[in-house]
Length: 274
Image (tube, rainbow, N blue to C red; front, side, top):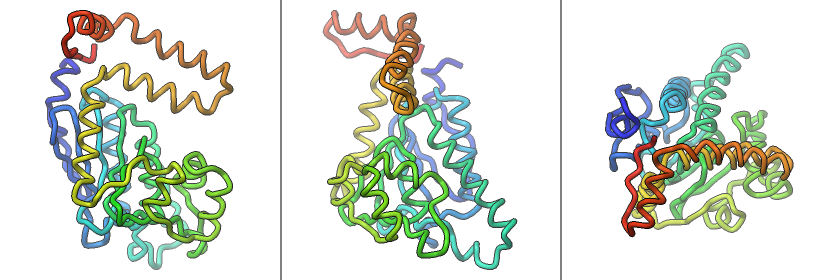
């Protein structure tokens, strides 16, 4: 199966806690779907996130952009399901947390761009899910928080690493150590949120950007994301060397030739992912 045909194929898996839709042939809309629990992350949601995103790591041609949102209008994800966790033994708690870790790592490592469309409260693990995405659009009424220290724990699926990369060390310390919530407007001012949207237009705006990304050359998109994500952990000189390795992957592709040909023929390119 070619990448072009793979993007048209539906994902065959069904999930207990997620829904998947194809609003565009090359765009996958993923919804955290536990509205009765404010889309809180239970063990099954951790498994479902891992299954979905690990599958996309293995077969990145299945789509070209992803929007991740929550069901309903009030919550993106309220964090870990504390009702499920009530009474857990230490061993069971740690076993569950390993499931969450695997799910978030698969999301972070997904080569396909992922836009978080935060439609409401994103607390604890929900905030960490949003921060694990490539960038965030948020509804004007959305609220964020990492309140784990108020519960005797700390962020454990990336929050201590992704938040300071988004807002800076000193701001992150204030938010992490106080456990206080912050607004979508504050998140945008600090650089954590890319765009604040009216609630009714959030999904459409995120999908529009996803469709724009999906219209670009998929190998180029994946390589650019790869170079940016991993290059930030390197020195500038090493990062530039890493970038060239990523760049050279595109020189022999049909998409590179199609892009130049379309530019000279003054038409929109049709990228095949080859």
